Length: 318
Image 1 (cartoon, rainbow, N blue to C red):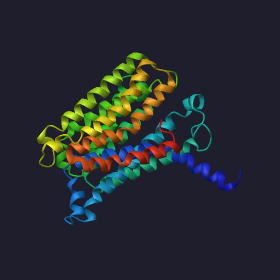
Image 2: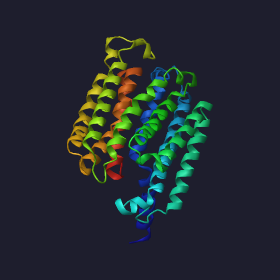
Image 3: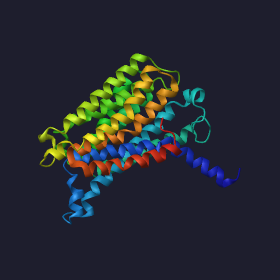
Image 4: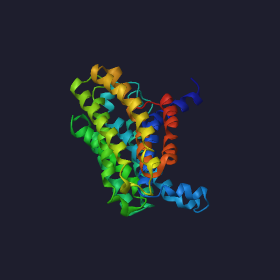
């Protein structure tokens, strides 16, 4: 093996730790929050010449912040799991020796620091949310992940807070739309709950609970679009149903996989359900985005799906 090949494997190990496909799903959270803050109209204003690209600077900082938060959090997941992965997943970067545990911890720390600095460029509330996400991610990585109730709840709070980080582009709106965090909380709780059987298999009751949570999420995101007061712009019949195509796509992608995993909770079916569930976060976000900013904005968010799926073919998702 030549030097160039060794260097490639070295840097690939760091990228594997960061889960690039998953980071793209975190970008979708920010775009949804940005729409819910009322800032989604900036994209239309740019096309009409009513706004300039500088209007998107807060969004750029928030996207950088969530990249650091998710990347750093997932890197520390592997840092804390190094001994366990040595037995159960020896091909991962740390147990395989491609990345040392110390260097992984350094990478995670740098990513989290970048995230907090980026959030500081937007608002103090953005910084507070970034710190909350950092604490929640490290708590999950170190302690909560193996608890059947607090683990899923903890991870759900990370993603719910990430959506509110997007809303913090307009800080005052966070206090009005805090309830939106409940949607990813329930969705991620379902994925995290079923993922506990990825290695040794799971329990049917856990799979049933996960399917019920997904059903609640689907009902909530569809119902959201019919409440006029939740929209950032005047709505008509077309806008009311803008989220329906995205909700249908979400149901078709995730329900069959979750139902299969619930019926037959073997590791292979559970891993497949988790992978599809994580990547489909983008479809969930596109659905909520369409509720707030219409069909075009929902499609803008959905564009992230093929990007994430492309990364998923190269780098592990779970």
